[in-house]
Length: 440
Image (cartoon, rainbow, N blue to C red; front, side, top):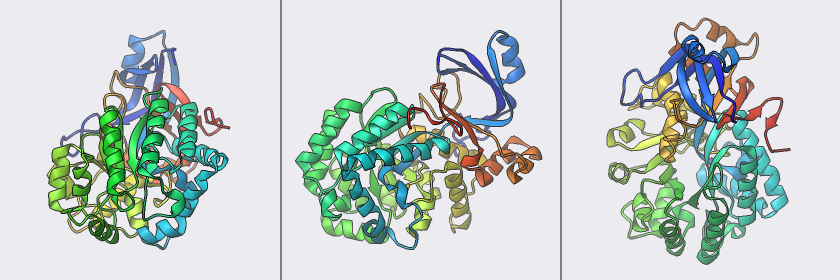
């Protein structure tokens, strides 16, 4: 986008961390966002910006809310069609639902269809950046990267590496996984808005040789990220410690192979010990908190207060398809509700939820200099939220007494029906009428 534009709406973002700073929510009830060459030039009061830039084309979105694009810190591309398979715990759910569907990704044509459905799911819910588990097949992961490039979304993903404890169709040798990952890194890492993450599924399904291949990939490609699962389920943790009898805990398995660092994002971490939290903080690693998935699978409650006290960074992930959909509004609401019910829960407000759904995710991915809030200099990644006419949400927002209250209503009530437009780098990547750009 080369044209300079001024967007007028209620503008809300969290340029500061509300867990550490009072007044972290920055709100402009009659706000203006000045965008030039795909980047944010200024944010503030509309009248002030309009007076300073009288010749700039203005878009009048009064009555709507302009937020930073959501950042999903953990989501699975091949699991779109198993959303809503309730009634199982993690390992049973994998065997009955997720793994058979993921085996279908061997059909590259099918994988392309799922990639388009997946990216539509992200964009239609206002997600502009996501850390994505790819497929266990190189061609299917290629299909995801190609579709992501066409969509304009900011996607980090990787080939899923496993050589045991799943179903045979999803296993690879460490050498084959290393070669596939290397090729995908060469073709897609750093291309446009794409980046790569080395992606062992979890220690339960990766031998020492496979984890050694992950270490080699990280050493040889210092710019890539790392993602995996950890401490999600009590049975999973028990089985991992049986497979790695010398390990003191789950995290130590990854530490042994130098896989816990500043570029690492560990999904779930519900069952973490105090020692693991201390070491995660020391390593600078981040955790993707997936409350809908944790509830749906009965995995447990994320101990947010303990993570915060230890200094561990965390953000929100939808975890499709063990999660209940692509909505980051819903994920934020569930995070709030779980903390309300947890005996040592951390009281959250709407600023916390917006931060966890936006800037915290950007920080976890090492992208906070590029996206996550609406400060000048960052990419113009944002979502326009407008409640449906005559809806309960519209009534609540019309009578909200302050911006924080309005934001709380959005997290409580808004879904994809309220997403009017999504932009990345100033480019329109989604509207309800257009769908996702670049995807049939």
